Image (cartoon, rainbow, N blue to C red):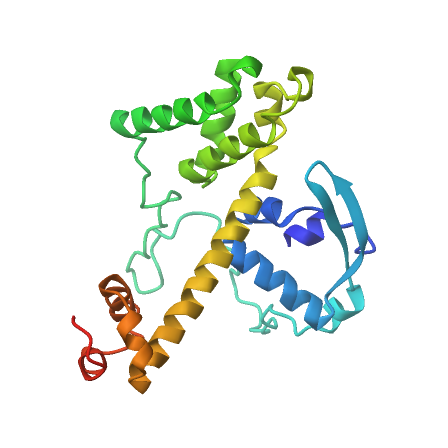
Amino acid sequence: MFLADKASDDGSGIWCSKGTIQRHTELGETTVKRTVRAFLKEGILVETGARTCMNGFTVVYRIDLTKVEALEPTLEPEIETGSTVAPVQSGPGTGATVAGVPGPPRPPNHPKTIHKPPTRGREAAEDEDAQKILAAYPPDRLRGKAACLAQIEEAMKEGIRPEDLLQAVQAYATDSAGFTRSKVCFSDNWFQSRRWQGYLEDIRTKREETQAASADHHARLACWISDRSPMCKHITGTQVAALLASQLVTKAQIQAAGLRL
C-alpha cells in the first residue's frame, strides 16, 4: 500500500529508499528487504532504473498492474440476506425488542488501552541521549541546538536506537575530519535533511554481515564438536557458552568432544 501510494496512476515512478519504507510502515529492515525481493520475484514490482540521491542512488520501481489485477481478492464476497422490516438501526441498541428484553448497549467508541505519557525519568534519559548524540557532531559546525535536539528526539521516537544514531554522527565526524570547514554541513541542516540515514544503513549492513559471519563460525564449531574433531581443542569457553545458548550443540556433545562446560 505504501509503494502504491508513491506510484503514479500507471504504477510507475516509485523511488524511495528502504529506510523510508521502514520508517513509514514501522516494519523491520529485514522484513522490508525480504518483501521487496519477494515482490520482484513474483513480478509485482519491476526495476526500471535508478535516481541519484545524497547517499548514492535509489532504485526506481514500477508496479505491474496486470499482476496485481490477477491476484486473488482479499475481500469476502457479499452475501445477500434479503431485506428486513427495519434494516438500519439509527440509535443505540438499548430499546425494547419484540420480547420486551432490552438489547445490548452500544460499545464505547474509545480504545480500552490508554497510553500513559512518558515519565519524567524516561524524558530525562531521552534528553541525555540527544545531548550526547549532538555532542559527537563536529563542534565548529554546530548551529541551532534546539532544532537539532528536536530532530534527534523525533528520530528516536520513530524507533531509531540512540546508539545507532550516535554511531552515524561519529561516522560523519570521522569522514569529514579532513574536509575544509566550508565543506562540513551545519548541524541543523544535517539533521533536518536526515543525512544520518545513509550512515545508519551502512551500520546495519555491517551488523548483518557480522552476525552472518558469526553464525557461520558457530555452525563450523558445532560441526567440529559433533564430529569430535581434533580442532575442538581450539574452542574457547566463551564459544562453548555461545554454542549452548544458540542450542547448536548439547551438553552431552560438548562433554563427548572433551570440552569443559
